[in-house]
Length: 270
Image (cartoon, rainbow, N blue to C red; front, side, top):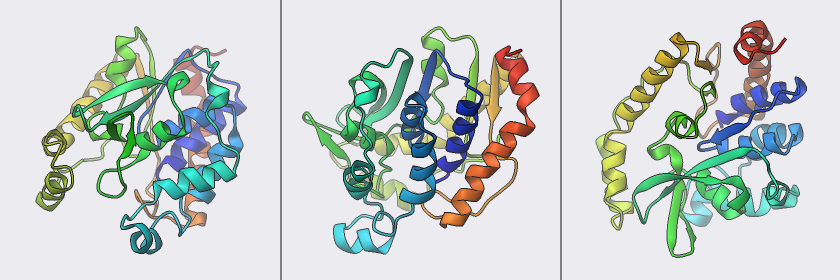
């Protein structure tokens, strides 16, 4: 649900008619990426302030009905489909746009061009382990790419980009703690066919801080800019009222407007 902040930032960028040659999405950032490429402020706003906290998608109802805390099937196959969302407009996308997805069969995160994805794989890119079921497709099982890649900085650099605008949902000084033992045990038990995921979770906090430290170095060199919430809100990963989500979305737009001059200098916009 914290993706409401990213959605607000991207809607502001659309207002400024700012676009990018390359763009990358991780976790719910994958949905944000698609809506941004479609230039749809409606999807950006509706998904993160109306759809994502539907009680039929998150909480006790999906737990009783499906045995999972988050029903990604309901969110994508019912809510998104009924809203008219489709990946078809992105088939002819000219940007270098990629989404990170964790492949349980291979035990690693890989990046996929949006032109090659369907709604099932977009769902997979946002499906958090334990909270939702892996998406099965073509003999593989997929989950959220944020298991190992929380910032797509390495992929961006590998593609030859020399400037990086990073939109995060947590403050730059956020301290990610090691995964609790119970979480690692759940990983080991739930995904027994993929022992690598438990190992990845054991070092996830280390990977996160390594990536953030690298981004800080790039920022000092004038090669990166890190955008994140200017204040704390009550929105968590899987909780937030409509009012709180709207507040987070609006906070992003306020932050973007407040940092407009610095952002324009970074992007070399007159």
